[in-house]
Image (cartoon, helix red, strand yellow):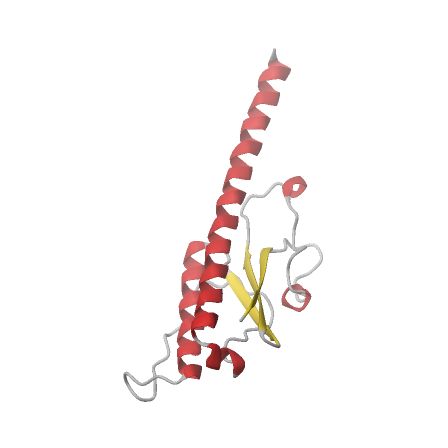
Length: 156
């Protein structure tokens, strides 16, 4: 009977873990959609590469200062893109643990990666960084936990 109860407890813990993983994936998909809509709403900024964000994954949680437009109420496409990027970064950092993102322009397509850490994840349940941009996670040591990534490609 004790083996049965232990098995049931482990099954319950795994179910709760999968539920949390699913919640993070839904939030990441919402943010990827938000980024896609911002890009589609400002195609001039996108074509000027103003939405590109590359580099390495960072799990910092410090809020970024929201940029201002040079002329109030008359923002350029590049300034709007800068505001969109800052707002996305700030909300991602509060909504997902270790939330970060990358965007790369690929002609008239945008490649969007939403990244986050899953705290307390059982390694056997992790798919790790299989959808992550290789250059974004290259600086993370092999023994360290890798972020989870959601990849979305959109066409304008």
